[in-house]
Length: 443
Image (cartoon, rainbow, N blue to C red; front, side, top):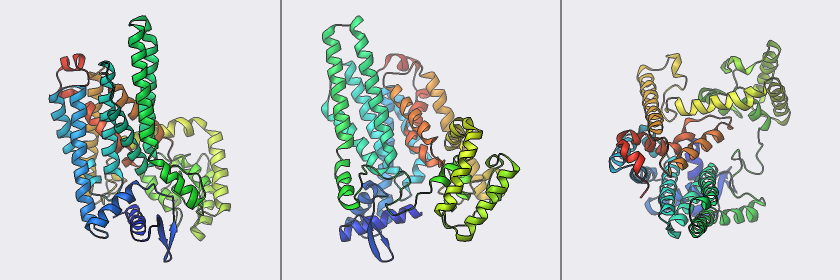
């Protein structure tokens, strides 16, 4: 188990036995809003049925969720392309080691991926009904509830709502222009159906957050409908200066492991910084002194954090394009293309070739598998252009999520896993006949 797993379990057990959504601190239970309640509720339910800290049951049930994701991915491919593509998509999803890896970890990813796939599958189904002049309240309400489940698991689940809502708004704009090619009655019917879908999606997505928001107002005395950006509680220090400084040079996951996760509590080594972390010899000496001052206490005090903030401001002023364009682009590329071995004992810096031969081999194989899936998806997306009606939603979600991830200072490969079902759907187009791509609409 990783630290987050233990934290989720602690919250779940305190909630289950004491009715307090909180963490144990020096023998006391302190209320928290650092984590959304979705995964702790999942753990509490399993612990109540199968026994405390029964992570074996947790992982077995997550395997079932992972299997459900395989069926949802196959259903999306069937609706968008063909039965043949659906079979290929199911096989690619079932054999994907990255999805399976997180199904065997007590973290939010397995459930988040499942509900993302469920929401998008329902959205594809609902979009198809617009073409048939039909609408189903249950489909769009279910889509909204699936989005709500994503948000209750991780706050970045809101990107999924944004993608679907933005796509529906785009359909409304298109319907407004159809007055020149269709009847006024048909146009009004389209608008009513799409507007109703927007309303149901919004209700389903945000209604589950109401109890959590009220609880935070009552218990924590803060209006917090999600969770704080840095997963901190009210009395915890946010290292804003340090975080901003890391974004002036951070480009890949190895630095997250060697620098970002070390603060606070561990020693920082100046030699773990890449050359791009310094703009001049003077800046290197300043950073080295800052590291030395931090290492004495191993705590990001307000004074030290202010110095990090000042250093960050200078670097951003010197190279704004680096901060706002090039480094976010590199972080996005790193999250998409690196070997997904963060849950394994493999060395994140695999390219140094100084790891144990077994784990070095695992890193190389995982890297090649990841490149294989991404390459298949790119080739499939090119083959499916112009995209099947509804496929644009999947592309939009991948784009919005990737752009959001570029704004983070900690590029962790797991953050792109929510997009992997869509990568597999795009790859499945290669296994569908060309006639299916041009003639078929979601059904």
